Every structure is written in C-alpha cells, then in structure tokens.
Image 1 (cartoon, rainbow, N blue to C red):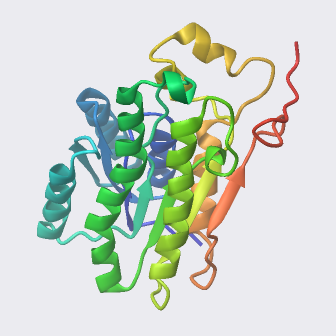
Image 2 (image 1 turned 90 degrees about the horizontal axis):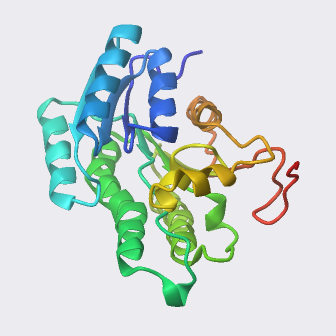
Length: 257
C-alpha cells in the first residue's frame, strides 16, 4: 500500500541533503509537495524537475525558517488554497563552527539556535493547528545523534539537537488524544553539505570528516522517512536513531587507513 500517494508533504530545507532526497522519494511515490528553502534558483529547479518527472504538484516557498513572519505568510497562503499538509518534515537545520565554548563565535551560535530550534518551532506552530483541526497528520523532525550524546566542540550544536529531541517528545505528549503522530529521525555521520557548512565552506576540512568509512547517504534518511510515514495509523514510531555500520556511537568508529 502506498501511504503517501495523493497526500501533501511540507519539507523545510529542501534544496539539498536530506530535504532534497526526501522530496525526490516522496514525489516518486506520488506525493504532492510544499518545499521551502533559502536558495531561490535551487528551489525553482527542484520544483520543475519533480513536477515534470513525477507529475505531482509542487509549491515552492523561498524563505528562511528563522523568519516568523514568512512562516506565517506561507501558512496563510496554504490556507487560502485550502491545502492542509498531511505530513510535516522539519528538516531545515545546520551546524556552524566547531569551537570550544570559550572560543565560540556568537554569530554561529545564533544561527544554529535560530534555525534548529526556533525555525522548527515557527513552522510547527503555524502548520500543526491545521493538522489538529482535521485530527490527522504526521510530523517528522530531523534530529541528530548529537542530540543523544555530547561530543567535544559540539556544545551549542549538541544543545540545539538535544532541544529537538525534547521538543519531539513534548509534541508527542501534547498530541495525545489526537490521531497525529510525531517522530524524530536522528542520523549519525551522513555525507551531505553538513560538514561544508559547519566548516564555513572549507571543502578540505569537510572531506576529511568522511574519510576511511562509508557514511550514510541522504537517500538512507529519505528511506527511513518513507518507512515511518508508511506504518499503520495505530503505530507511532517516536524516535529512530540511524548510524552508518562503521559508526556505533558518536565516539566509536571503524575507519580504514
């Protein structure tokens, strides 16, 4: 049974990495999409490719989830179109910098807190009431194993992902008595643009993160999202932790060479 065909999924941060892979896989299964991102050219390209390739409807909203007013504007536009997302995927997130706490850059901290925590809250606050009114929907929060175990120089990024874990649990509690389900999918090491962003565009540093082992791919996380969405309505997977086989926790690796 195809659990997503004909439904609407809202995916934040859809122009690269997990978000793009999730959009591609859901569209392949006949899901209509609402995609957001900050890079207009990439977003427009994604919209056209998915519409032409899979014959699904794709609405694209170019904005930053850190901007509450724009989150509200998107929600209002969806309501004017009488579209209620069946699936909300809070994917937009990032790491910025890898400094000790006493050497951290305030700008990096604000970027992570505003995107990973406040952005998730803004989108959830504007979309979830529509789901609650209809008493149907599925929320997927893309977290991280960094929200389970703190590692050196992770500090504020760790804190932001611990917050995602806590919010995911809180959302589930607040939704008791409804038919709405909520899951946090928490990847370990995954080869996307994540490290490039964390190291402020230093491709050499970013590439070294993935040397000597097979990291997760964005498509692996998309597969997990599809699986979680596809479970029967009486099944609520609240948390899924995914590591590459070569990594068993944030400190234990099997790296070659």
